[in-house]
Length: 273
Image (tube, rainbow, N blue to C red):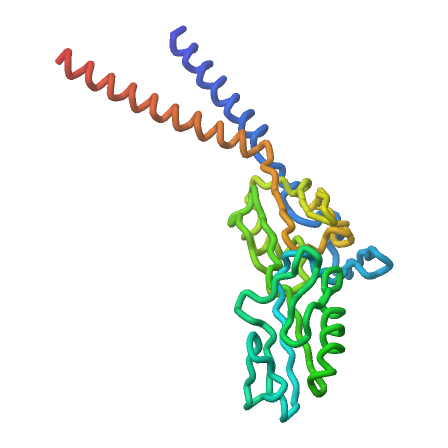
């Protein structure tokens, strides 16, 4: 009888400890949803913007950026203005492409770009709209009513840590936010620490580190909400992941131990029979 009571109490103790471990290791639901402080009503939520109501500033062309630059014109005599190499002429639409290859034009360490006929232009420190104006001004001496397009081709961000698809992603648009990057990476896993997401940025030769709290709607007004070239986003794992990993390891060891015990019992019975 005492033996049965001992086993009963032992089983009850193990069950209680299991529930306690589960309670400590499980994630708190309140830390999982995004923007938990946004009112759950039918009213429109408005968040004050930074920088005097202008939260987004255009990407700035930096050294080592790769640019796609095209110049188009309706000038019928364009063919006689086409450079001997580097640019191409399409007589049907009268277009000059100043992109010498699919890789685009590399911005030098000094912020300069070499263009056919136009020569060396300093584009570093300009945004793409300003670069368009400069190239259009230079092109107007050669082409009639030139239309210029400039795009940064190497706008990429890296997302690491507790996301479903970590990696480096190239973004076609110049306007991308931290939420866009997280979406490209397949969102955070259940173990991602949403209240402390890290951003690492190279800015003017120095590193900047910022933190996001995805549970808070204030992230929408953060000066780091919109991304820049080569930004790195790191999602730290929550403590619950370590607890879950330890629990899984303990469970596997228990299964192996139970299996070994069963094999031992079977072998012992076969031996004595």
